[in-house]
Picture (tube, rainbow, N blue to C red):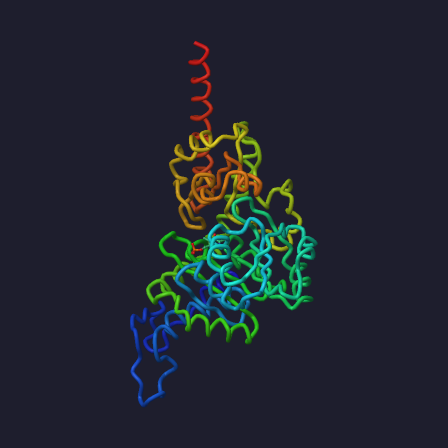
Length: 393
Ligand SMILES: *Cc1c(COP(=O)(O)O)cnc(C)c1O
């Protein structure tokens, strides 16, 4: 959806004409007679503010129904509850750490088995798919090395085994990528990131196409109760109003910053799907409609934790914090932050080297962001020269 369609997919209040969706801060709804009401009976089951958000995200993703949860992980949890003991999942190998923790430390003990596979090569899925496989779980692009998987091809494989394809569309957003149109069955989002867009809330979303899945997720949402409250539903609608504007600006800045990083002497490798050197650039180009996202990661020639720390503590506009997708730029050092709990060897195997740094480009002027990185790199290079001179003395 373009910016016009997004804004006008949000209804005005039919009761008062309020151009902003009202926040229905209520626990229950008064009934005319037992069971006779206006479509709302209890706020866990349904709330008009949340309903407006759920309709909006369903439209955004070209799905039939959307469901809002308290966090991205609560949304992932709701999808996992579709499974029964003995079922199997095939998941992308560098899956979001929180999803890995949920799969391994919560669901494994209920008898759900997960195979981790490099899904950038769809053939790899054929090695472990079987009649017990119920879900194929993809993130594209992944975090933080931005690998891309072919959603259409994977959906063909999955459907021939009657498995559902889940795409975590957090990094691409529906502005760039529409997994349901590529054959996926379920889209999930951490609304905390680009959809909210202002780093001021946590939220999660599930969007589906089939009425059968819609009914199942609706049941789970009400039965387990991990819903998004009305205030945060309103705030998320408010964030989504500017999604296309923000995301396109962020993509444009990221493109320029990636090109700048390629020229920096202290940098070893730059990971950005928009670069023609990226291993999955060709599929990204088609699948993401020319929008490659606002996240970039890179490694340093001096591949040490200390070298990366020296940089991430020197930027002024890129704030040192976890998360991504907000209007303010963020910088993070996965080895000490998001990926700290993963044993070093496994972390490095999955591409998260000691010196890896991840950027989330915000909506600041791109020249300011480039200058910010430039001065941080210069400080670190100068310090190195100074310390080498000191050693020689
Ligand atoms: C942040 C994130 C999540 C988890 O969302 P929360 O809102 O933090 O629970 C899931 N998937 C991806 C790709 C994320 O970046």
